[in-house]
Length: 184
Image (cartoon, rainbow, N blue to C red):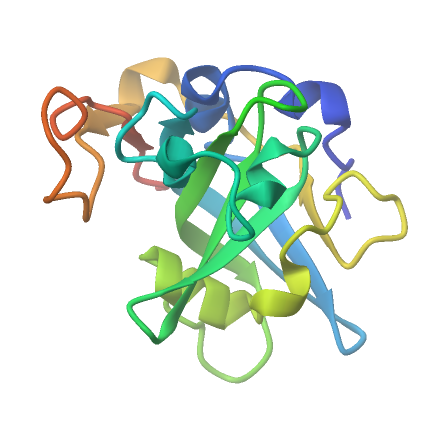
């Protein structure tokens, strides 16, 4: 097991945290088993002014978690069938988060390596759903956390617009706030 990321790692703007999470490990201790993957794709969502961010509507029962301390899990249900995992960042009271979109699995249960390329597939592979919403990822005894990994060479990080926000107006639709790299 690697060293867990501490709260100070998450206490930075979403646009800084999103590429910094690449190469780190997302770990879920589930039913006495370690399930983990190396983060290979993320997206930044930055506050109430970001029209692609859930916080654009302000503080609601759904977005309340986004206003918590950095290093909190924000897990939400979308399209009536998928869970999405985000890491709250910046400072407490400011609603920013990074969506973890893809993992390269390193520890898993079962004979076949689960697919985790896509935010719904990664939550399925790691067994993340509603009960993990609001968990403190910095809790030393917690079931869900992030560990230090091998950050990619910055030259290997690719940027593009965020995925699945087609109805969002410009400039938010075209901002290259998606970060990814290929793990070789």
